[in-house]
Length: 191
Image (cartoon, rainbow, N blue to C red; front, top):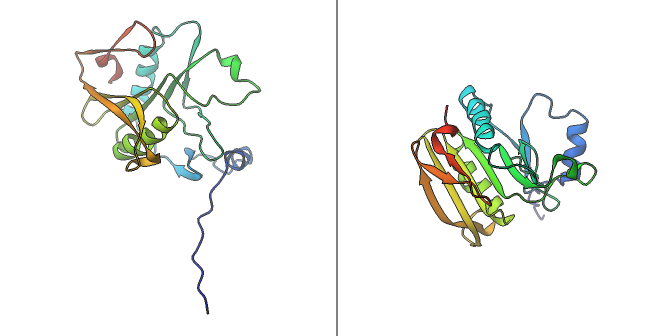
């Protein structure tokens, strides 16, 4: 008698979207990563405050020609639709009506207080694979902004990609907003 191994069921983004349309995820924060439905940690008040502060800090930097999308999917391929806390994409909000979600961003930003490793490695590897040039990681635990850039292939990392450059910033410092000549005060990102 031959024994069979159980198979992992991978979801497509279209299947995931249909489940969401049917209210399957009501009251739950989920995203699709590499065909897997990931349930996200509950959002604490400090995370929510940091999200609003980051949006307020980035909004003056990016005017006409860019849109800052809070908690909305980036879609690339059939099996992933990560929802960064913020993504700066080219164009306007109307550009994506009827055409689907953007597949890349000038900047992806995650805020983390309880899922540091997941956001740093898994989401970071996925954003590097997507070719996103800048990934900002607001580390609420250590009160620092981790800036990752220059995505490169690397078989040893999540999604076989990683960022080649890493710099950390602390409150009191400033960092250049990607793609424009504006500075963001790191202290403005923290509650």
